Image (cartoon, rainbow, N blue to C red; front, side, top):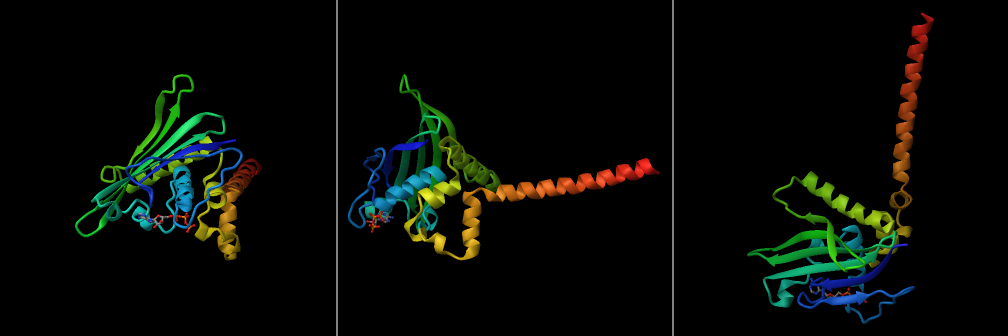
Length: 228
Ligand SMILES: Nc1ncnc2c1ncn2[C@@H]1O[C@H](COP(=O)(O)OP(=O)(O)OP(=O)(O)O)[C@@H](O)[C@H]1O
């Protein structure tokens, strides 16, 4: 079973961009307790972003997720989340995601800078990068970018042995979306299809039906050739 061990948060919502805040998760249970605005939701959202790459629904495409440069008295703030987890196979892996928010003349500019997956040699403690994704918006076409973001997220799913749909809808559900089981039937069906990976079975059934039809036509053709 995959477990999360530690998380470092810098420059996300009220977490200071200059100081490293490290949360250690205990087994079998960690309770996060604090007054309103203390940062409980921030911790859950950072866990979710690290694992799935998904920003919280109210993050305005990242602009309001990074510590506001105005609050810090700067023109630019950098955000970073480092999550150390054990894979389903028991290996230590660190996922690092870095961001930047810059105050331009008339607007704020949000950038996801890089996402890195590292392993740690258990004997030497040496850190090895095994998957790095830089967000070069100007160099790659959008399709390549989306492909790479998905590839990075699915690498984490595979390491954790938990699908993105389960991480998003069951394990790290945003508090505003926690009542999704009470939503309309079509939303509910889509969520359940995602959680149980039913969509790929539906697609597989469609492919089987198509193959069956094609083979039946081929058989008819062969029979007509032999009978004539
Ligand atoms: N862009 C931002 N820059 C700096 N601080 C921010 C930014 N956005 C939100 N905050 C602050 O971050 C904190 C967010 O706290 P969070 O929602 O994680 O707390 P919480 O402990 O979950 O609170 P509650 O119990 O009310 O749900 C708030 O104090 C908010 O004022």
